[in-house]
Each structure stands twice: as C-alpha cells, then as structure tokens.
Image (cartoon, rainbow, N blue to C red; front, top):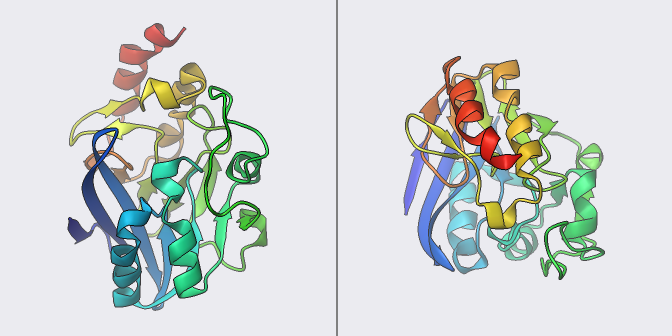
Length: 221
C-alpha cells in the first residue's frame, strides 16, 4: 500500500492485490477547501483504508466513478454508507451499474452492490474536476481533469508505465478501436501529469499519444 500526494490538490492510494491476476489498483482523493472527493473506490476488501485516507484529508463529500467495473466500484457501498456520501457516474454508465443490461462484451450483468444508488454527474452539487466522456473500455467511461493542477485522471482509458501508454485489458474492453480513439483526449487537454488506474504516473509530452496510437491501433481494426 502506498499513499502519496501527486499534486497540490490530489492524493493517490495504490494497492497491489490479486483480482484473478496480480494488479495495481489506484484510486484518488481530490481536496478542495478541506472537502474531499473520492475518485473510484477499488475493492471492498480495503474500503476501510479508503475511508481512513479520505477522513485524514478533510470532510468526505462524494464518490465519483470513472466507470462501473468491479475494481472501480466494489468498495462504493461500504464507503458511501459509512461516510454517508453520494455516488456519481456518467449517465451512459448507469444501466450497467444498475444491472439493467450487461456490458456489451459480457453475457451477465455486473453485481455492483449499489444498483439504483448511483446518480448522474448532473445531480452533483459540486464536481471539482471537469469530466470528459471517453467510451471504448466502457460505454460511460470518463476521465477527470483538474485544471489548476493540470492532472488528468484517466481511469482505464490506458494502462501506463512511467514513459508509455498501453491499452486496457482487451477482455474487459468492449470496443478497443473506440477506446484508442478516445485517448486523443490527452492531446486535446495537454495535462502536465497523466495518472491511470493500473499503472504509474507519467509526464505528458506531445509524442506519447501518437506513439500509442501507431503501436496499437492497427491491432484493433
């Protein structure tokens, strides 16, 4: 477990665990005037760590989800109920979070434990980051941009190391070509720092996305 401050207003909790395979799961805390906004919740097995981390930074106000896959939403019920805070996601993601339909590449619905309890972003009193719809990995997948800190929280839009971007896991991505096209958002925004759910942070440069696009797009046709 590693808890680090990655910018003036953003902290990151990194947990290595096994979810079928060994995986690094990152979640984030955005702090604005002692109000704390949790970005993704990881797994329920360490929800207590998420709660303690959020409370150590100020007053937890809400949970915002990049999308509804298990490793991003499993802890949401415990955290939301313990802290008495709402959960928000993009409206395009709600049918899958609510178990109304399965994800396009799945035969069964997600069991999220928060069915009918997640609200669309439009219902939030405050969203301390700008969100952008980036479909491909999930229909309602979003990334969050903190303008003042110039940090782009990318969720599963990419997997990253300290120098390169890589695609998310094919098995859990319903349209990889669309996902790769959605990655263009980093060149539209030009953040200083890119942080992903399953990888290490990297500094933005104008070469990162063209290399990624060239390397992986032809295999997604």
